[in-house]
Image 1 (tube, one colour):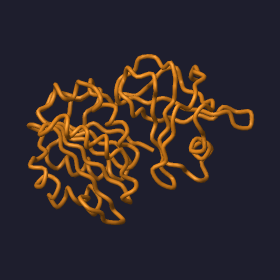
Image 2 (cartoon, one colour):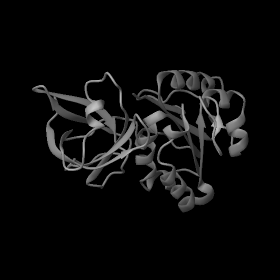
Image 3 (cartoon, one colour):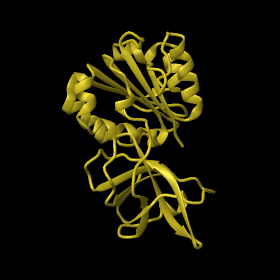
Amino acid sequence: MPDWLESRVAGRKQWNDSLFSLEIEADLAEFRAGQFVRVAMDIDGERVGRPYSLVNPPGERRLEIHFNEVPQGPLSPRLSKLETGERIWVSSRASGAFTLDKVPESEDLWLFATGTALGVYLSILGTATPWSRFRKIFLVHGARHVLDLAYTEELEALCAQHGEKFAYARATSRESGPGIYTGRITDLMKHGVLESDMGAFISPGKSHAMLCGNSAMIGEMSGLLEKRGMLRNTARQRGHVTTEQYH
């Protein structure tokens, strides 16, 4: 069991009926961008905790998590109703290996996310490391609905700050919107739409892909990239594709 830090909610944002972000004041130990913490509440005499990736980069006292409310879930419906100042518990240390220090050198970095998995990339992109390591960074975020595409202002700020070094695309599978692709990420990849529009091709000779999100996207994308000769990056094998299944 983790050691818990007694913490307080510092801010709350509701993106749509079931999508939320919470800011939390907590004295978390130093962590690496891409890691997660366990967040908990005391419910009926039991401390109920779940893992959540951090949206904020290291070095900030105010933590941030991004999550969907699962109606029948034991924790998320209660998290979504918390207000500023209310108590919450956070594990004293972050965990996880979905970090850039596990990624081999390459020219370009491709970041693929579905749903709330976008948050982990915001943490990574909030540090200096990716901008100094890679020639160009591409971010692709897929969701079901337009209102599921959170953090647009933050992404546009990254574009303004880094210019041609950064490009991002958004896609929704169940509706259309201005400036947004319609369809699943994997279908857009199969048809070559994303790479053509973004002016780059993913290949083992120059690219590394990070995949974070639902298992269907990760499995299908991994298969598409494997056909190009891109190997999975593991502790035993340096490869071209780093994955993390995200809920």
